[in-house]
Structures are given as C-alpha cells and as structure tokens.
Length: 393
Image (cartoon, rainbow, N blue to C red; front, top):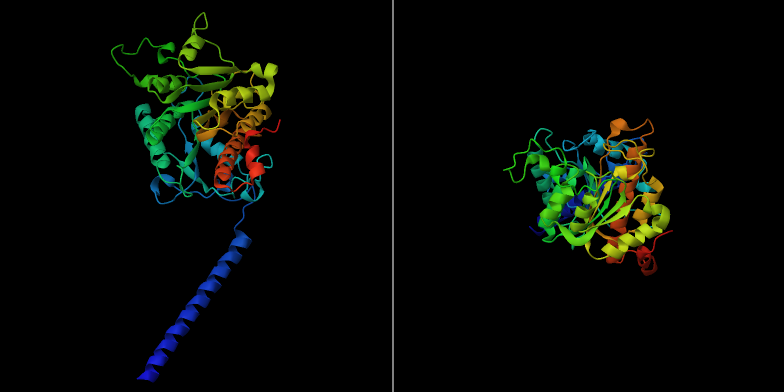
C-alpha cells in the first residue's frame, strides 16, 4: 500500500517536472522566435500607426490601454474639397519609419512606444458616409466607449489621439470628454480658420427657420460654435493658433463673435513678430499646466506649399518645423485628448509630405502625453521631469 502510494507520488512529481520542462522549453522557443522574427523594418509588416499592436478596441472592452490611436474616416461635412476619409490610412502609412526600436525622442528623454504606457492602434470607427446625424452619434458613442474605460496603468482614463477625417470630428470628441469628465475642457486649436462660425453664415436660404438644430449645422466650420453653445468648452480657456482666414461680410464681426465665445487668437503673421517662443508663452499663460486640454490640429495650419493635401488650403501658413517646435514647447499642457484632421491624401505629392508631417505631429503629441504621465509616475528622474515645462528653443 505504502509502496503504491510512493510510486503514485513519484509519478505525479515526474509529470510535474516534465510539464515544467516542456513549458520552459516552449517559452524559450517563443522568446527565440520573437527575437528572430518579431521586429519589423519601416517598410515591412501590416500598416498600423508606428507598427503598434492593432486592437479592435471598440469590440474588445477587456483590452486595456493607456493611449489609443483611433481613425475617424469621415469627410461629409466639408465645405470645399472632400477626401479626408482616407486620412487615417495615409497617416498610418506615413508613420512607418516610427519603429518602436528607433523612436527615442531625445528632446523629451523618452521613447513613447516603449515607456510605461501601453500605446495601441485601435483601428477606425466604422462611420456611415450616408447620414451625418447618424455619423455624429456613432463617433460620440465610440469616443465615450473608449474614453470611459479604465486605463491599463490605472488612476487615469485612456487618452485618444484621433486621426481624421474632417474637422467636425471635434464635436463628438468634446461631447465625449464632457460626458467622461463631467466638466468642460480647454481647447488649443491649430488652424488657418476660426471654425466658430454660426452655421447660418454659410448659404442657408433652404434651412427651415422653424427647425432648432438642422442637420446642416453640423459642419467642419461650425463645430466649435456648437460646442460653445452646449457648454463643452471652458469659458475663457480656448486658444486659436495660426489663423489667416478670410472673414464673412464687410467687417470683422466674425472676430467679434469669436471673442464673445471666449477665444484668444494667435494669427499666422504673429510668428514673424514674437517667434515660436512668443507663441508658446501666449498659449501657456492662458492654458497653464493643470486644466484639462483638448488639442486639435487642422493640417491646414501649415502652409500648403509644405502640406498641400488638405480640403481648404490657405497660403501664408506656418512651416512644419515651426509647428513642431511649438508643440514641443507646450508639452507641459494637461492634454486629455487630441486630433490631427483634414489630411486629404489625394491632393498630396508623390513624396506624401502632408501625411508624413501629420504622422510626425502625432508622434510629438504622444511623446508629450507619455512624458507627462512618466513624470507623474516617477519614471523620469527629477531633473528631467522638471524640464517638462522648459522648451528647447
């Protein structure tokens, strides 16, 4: 009896040891395979943003993340050239050289793709091209769904960097942030245009005067006006940067209305007088480092000679270098969400200059989000963390 029991125990022990050995061997083999075959070159692999893992976040609620790249392929609220629905695809393709093994951002002292944060490509929101009211609802629900989940690191909500799409996608993003945080947020808006126009400033003879909110009010030039009327933007905490738009009518009533809505304007020409440093100081003095900020970049803030692939190009814009320097200088902002919009790749040249610039802008935004989070977690040495409010100019 005792001999049989000892034999049984010996057999169990042998099986356990064999299982452990088998598991260890399998793990070792997987590690070897990963080392040999798990790294993509810039020109290889499936096209995700910066070769990040692709997760269908909207259908996988248990797949936690800290920062999500989300495509919003929507362009049926534009007033001039369409095509931005293909922007997410183009920006992803142009991010191909941002491989995680070579993405250390020396100005920030961090590799945003290999630091504390889990950064993933969540794919695109499947948005209808046939019904703008339904599209607005789809985008709003998608942003709420993704932004309401816990983050992988805990203690904070996930942050989304949205690749547009036309600029109207800001409205559902701001509605979602208001629902998630229960308060209005500040906005930093890089654009050639105001986008605070009353919708009736567009030709509106066909609008039913008895209809309170016609569907046509949802367009890429009025979404900030709608957001203001809905109380989504913190009063007096909104900044335009890079403006050079023409105005309506025969006077500056558009600017007056913009001021009434609580916006501060930095014109494109101002950079000639105050330089990037002055632009940075103007932004930081109004938004600070603690208030939650939504940062929105319309690619047409850059001169069309450098970024031609956009729906409403305006000559006389900033260079990509100037905009990147400004973004680096405002890294101390408490960014809770961001977008890069109005990239219409069919108008780009063979060198894909516009989408390349958009991909670099996304990299800079993600870097700033990761760096601020790393400083909060104590993952950046004190001296380096203290440099987060210092720009490199």
